[in-house]
Length: 169
Image (cartoon, rainbow, N blue to C red; front, side, top):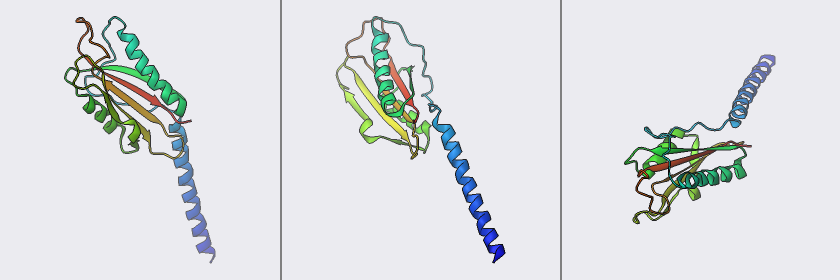
């Protein structure tokens, strides 16, 4: 009887130690903003243009503030994608790069705008949240291939990727 009780207590202590280690690792990860890989060829070097930066920055700021309201600390970055990049493929690349621990938020994955109207903005967006009960982190991306008006001739025809990340509270 004494050996069985000792074995049961040892097994319980091991299980408790494993649970404590898992909780500690999760606690440590909760404080970090998630790392997000962007599609190959994406660059954070954006072209200059009249009011161009303001429009892109406004989109990034809106996404960042949306994540801050729900997740606390957040960050956003803007990338120019290579010519010919399909917005839906760029969003899918980010989703695949996050891994299996992340799930898309269905109400936040959508396409909106005017895909068939030249010069009208078309946005493909999605938000993923980490599959974790405590302190989930979030990633939100938006890819838009046009601004909301016909750009001047000196603006390059680029596709933009805005990535916002938020960490759990």
